[in-house]
Length: 394
Ligand SMILES: Cc1ncc(COP(=O)(O)O)c(C=O)c1O
Picture 1 (cartoon, helix red, strand yellow):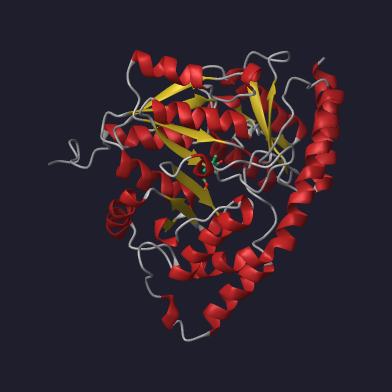
Picture 2 (tube, rainbow, N blue to C red):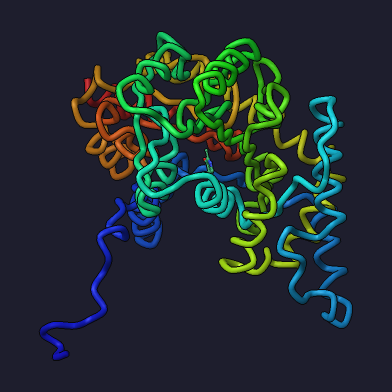
């Protein structure tokens, strides 16, 4: 082949949209390089480092000969899998068999494994709109069909059993992916709502995958795990958010027993194992509770600052945020284009937020997402800057 007709062409399946928040981060970095001060409310990651217990365990592992840092079993270090299983006992009050726990490269790696183990190409998977964008992008790349079901403030952005069944009647669904607390809205399903949704899905023959990455970060009421409702669900979680370990890339799946071996075989081939140092640190992170609870208390204060401060600026169209560290505000009173709004807020006021189109290709142009996983002083300064900027617009 000549260079006019190169063989290495991008596949159709690789044509997934970018994750727009990354573009906002790039624009913010450019401003910072030019000497501007930017408050980062676009990034969905804790500012706090991993707990000291995790860092100490990693340092100790590096201090040895390094021999302990080879591959691990594909399913994960056995003591970490046991510790994750114990976490269910401690947090939700029921036992999980460590044999059904798989350690993954963040929840991102878990989605790929779960989707491959559970779905055939062409299978339809229900998601909410808005939702975390990679759900639909990973499904598309794997040849599955994301089915976006519109949600709104009237259901606190939650998928209802009725809406799920209506989509299923149109064309059968193979699975549904739920998240509570949710990104980008920060809302949660009550135990009753989640139970009803899981039971309805299973009765209709729809497999449930539950992304529980924001568990631990609940302010209004405790989050319910889908696993407590049914042992036939696939539950995905991560050390990235509550445990403040985004870059360590460790997550986990609790799977029905019959899916464990297929997932193990897939993981052996796709990744071999999760970085050993990260697994060692993750296990020790469970002992850093006091530090992690202090970080969570900081988010709760930030949440109060925004819930009081933004309405005082005129930004009052958002729901009380139950969990995670996000607030999803309707800015359509100011603009028909939240992307342009986010760009102007960044350039003119030095506050980076994420436009809603990332999360919802249809109605996202009306919304922006604020992340409050930052320092309290930043939140106070952000409210002040936003207030003055909006006054200037008016
Ligand atoms: C809802 C949700 N799920 C999954 C992820 C991926 O996280 P990780 O791969 O770091 O576990 C994120 C990251 O922001 C998220 O918001």
